[in-house]
Image (cartoon, rainbow, N blue to C red; front, side, top):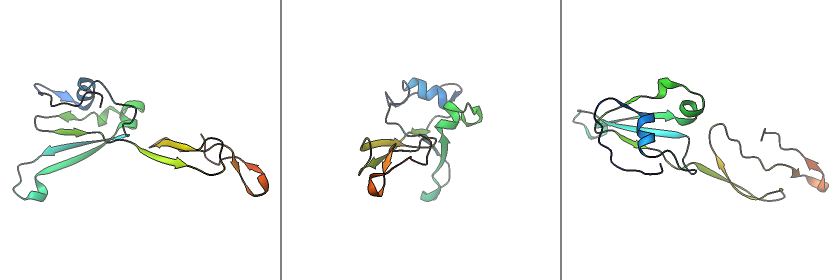
Length: 123
């Protein structure tokens, strides 16, 4: 999130409201969001419930059923996305983000005998 902080939740709020209050996601943000909700159970293992929200499905796919309500005491965590390192005989070596809907692709690959073959994934 661009401006992570502790926000006072008064009245009904949803995941999208909280993301807007945090001024959106950074470029490095992953495509999942964890909502950690405290419970009233006494066992340490059951003191909270974690819900996983697919941000691609919510933000790009428009699945508003994932825009769950947020309550006082909830913690929202959006971890950084993963990186894939591409090296070897490729057009552009280096790191590229990976995530749902993103398939790292090196472009043209050089096979044995210096013959080119196309990446089988859609880039």
